Image 1 (cartoon, rainbow, N blue to C red):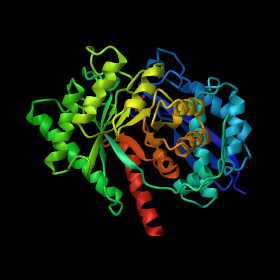
Image 2 (spheres, helix red, strand yellow; image 1 turned 180 degrees about the vertical axis):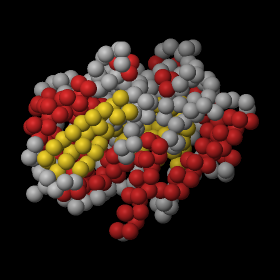
Image 3 (cartoon, rainbow, N blue to C red; image 1 turned 90 degrees about the vertical axis):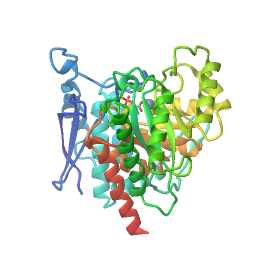
Length: 423
Ligand code: PGA
Ligand code: ZN
């Protein structure tokens, strides 16, 4: 049996040139499996805790030697000799070892890379493609909540629709744009391949670049590979993307829709009450083909979220990110109180593979649409592509340029080909 012989962790750099954790799980059959941890820039306050060294004389305090030691000295001794296909058991051991509700002891940046590398090892031992292995575990996972229990299921693995980050603002840039992300979400018919969705994204991206140049605006890039030009209002950003898509002849609603991540920011300083903000979004949705609105309100403002879901225009998904932080209890609460109709899934907000799948299963079961997402500081680990397919996610949100972003899309192309050959 290929049991875990060793786990080695070390520091690597993320896409921002800052330290993060990479873990390598070595099996007794000499195979090894690697995973790394992304980092958010605009984080929800209730996300699991990331451990950084806080020695501000080095890497702005962001070295992660503490998390590395937790893996090598505390987690590995407990997992030595376990079978990597026992994902549930292994994740349980890690959670028990931590003993806090938000991984404050071990750190999510120690927990996630180990849990992910174990899952990759498990898929190999089970001789399954990683996405298929995750899908199998997802369906087998039994979720028990206070009011109900979700038994084994039969969700099919499927390729999500991409949501490309084309323009960035908020904390991701120096511009005055209040919103953090503007998304282009292609729409293709069932018989068209994932490649066609990438084509819609790529052609629109380069049309957008041409338009920015024509208008004398800088073509600088944000943290996620979208443009960070000084486009200071949401309307300007949406107009630009619309013009860029239409330049190739793509038609709103037929070939694409748009999305926004407000990251809890107000659309403009002139709006104060939540009625005004809801009216603003409703008017925006009337004017533009918007399908997805993420974090329209700050995370503590439950009343606004609930009102917005009730009054939201037809066809607009109201998506929780910082609001729900991939936390099973918060997600269940937000769904029960009708405060969201869509959900961002970021594994490093919660920690283990099992808990990530648990959240996705609650969302699927309760018919809330899911968006598996990259983070502002990401790595070349393409694991979220397999995750999105495995949990039958509706969307995957990621930038369309930069190596650490396209790694996810290129893996989806590979999965698309594997699924195509099998059918
Ligand atoms: P992040 O933001 O920088 O916290 O990863 C991305 C997002 O909010 O979706
Ligand atoms: Zn967000």
